[in-house]
Image (cartoon, rainbow over all chains, first blue to last red; front, side, top):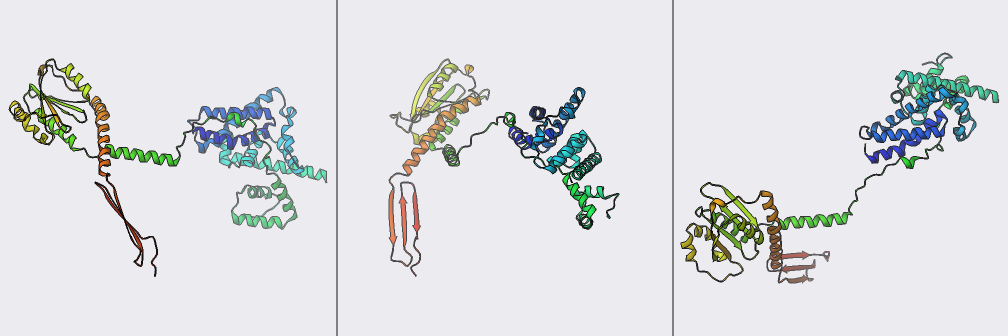
Length: 161
Length: 287
């Protein structure tokens, strides 16, 4: 990969990785650190990574960093109680807000695969490569996540009626 | 593929994920639209698709960019001019050698056929290029030295301890006979009178040297460098002067014919060495 291609990766993928991490961690500061670390690692291995595999490579590094952060946070405090609600400011209507709330309650694995699927349009295989799951596991996790969100929205809508 | 209360979630999930074929999609959508419960469930399923917010952007992008090494591109016009100059220079340098250079080759061969103790140095007076060829008949070894005037003199002094010079001027037109001359040495040399040194004459130096102290000529690289510096520049200069001579005394004739049905102009350019004719018919046929 050339320097130009690296810069192209920054331009194309940094926002997507940042969104993915923010959605999963709900911590903008931590997400920025992870994006920085991710691209630093890509720069160090610039000779070994090809442009066509760069996206999956970047998301994999970011995902692993994120898992490390989640584990670290679990040791100190409950993640849900230490919410940096910055991401909540981005929601702009009721339905999306319900969905966002539902996503926040998903288990980490389901949240990750769902955001990779919907935010970045990854297929089951590449999500599996990033998260280390099999394709069928990815599919099951996405199914469970959608089912949970559907039930969550349904419940809130019924309450507001 | 029939929807029921047990399987509808899996089928709707596949529909949402795009895992069904086109025919299956149509079949499932027909059932969804025909049933109020399925329709509401399908709406909820569709709402589970996350939409990335365009307002969430990474603000530290600028710090991630790395400086790219850019190569300045030469404008096309200048590139074309540079290429033309290069081609012109290459053509001029590789122009066929003039007669003067052929003389040098002849003399180089000629001097080798003298006896082992004699070397003839041939120098063209006009361009001061110097070419010496040394041949030792006994051992069969051979060396070639090409240098400019100064370099050659130094080289000779360094190589040869005792030098006895006899000089004779051979008219340029007789240089083809140099081979014979040298073979028959002093007699033949005496057979030619020594005229005044003119521009197109060659100076032949007959030198007695001690062959025991002969050394081979400089390396190929040295010869190539020296030869390129002097000879190519001289040849370039000579070629340009030849071309200028050929292009001298230009005469331009313009013949017009406006009486014909199709008027024409004929241009004729003639110089000492070139002739060019161009016929133009810029107007349409009057008919």
